[in-house]
Image (cartoon, each protein chain N blue to C red):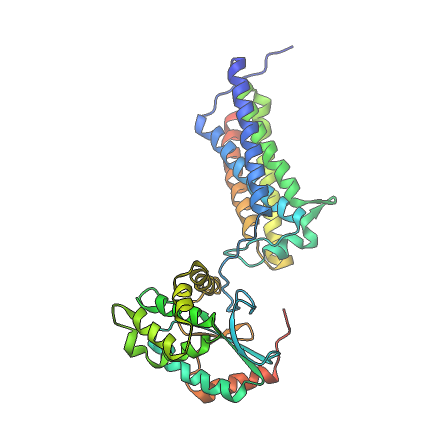
Length: 146
Length: 222
């Protein structure tokens, strides 16, 4: 069995990914809890939080998007932590994959909000912002592992 | 990385995730916090804790957020009263406290009105307070003047004095002011007709027109 190559990343990079994943996780968990309990979402800056949350676009394969978001952020944070633990190159390569998927999804969700629902939810925008920053960090990792 | 460090990191991570998850859940399902509305609608519908006079099933509900010491409110008061007397079978008038911080005696005045209200004379006290603003607005101990008004209204003075200082009174005024804040008010008087904030009408005719319009165009109940 060949030894997997190990690569070093600056500490701030990986820990930023973990911190952002935590923020995204909390945001998504909040939205998921709201969805499950059916209580109104306190909206600010934007006005369409409940509208977006209840729209037909808010589900994928029968599962609310917020649940997918929870899984995404948990997964991304998990990968980053796993890298810290094992310094495994394959794990490192998975991170930019995950963040790209998250970024592309966020782009789509913003499109849906702007053009299809025609309302914005500030918590979704926050998630999009987090996903975008994660994408940028993922690019930095990608450049190092290529 | 040695095993102990690994255990600590993974365990801490799991702990943080669980705490964040529970926190998010608690915030999501806790008592709903209301954010100030920016659309000019009224926070907190009129209920039994409000001081309301007029028709029991009004076609028009007018809510005024007011400050007894505010001169504009004093000028406004006879205007609203005049219109109310003409329309009292069709409209209700609700008074809510919104004492502005720069009026030193406004809070005391609001407590006095609440105490009077507990004895069924809220609007009578409000009347005295507005009509005699000059008498008490700038003095150091307005409470003595208010007590005189209470006597003039034949209130039970012992009960009045107790009520003026009670926590329940303070809470009632605070409650009104809070609903004002949640309705995103920043000035007094602020008038709300059928749940929507209006530009303060400058003349009696303007107010009458607004009332007539509201009677002719009832807003659907929320």
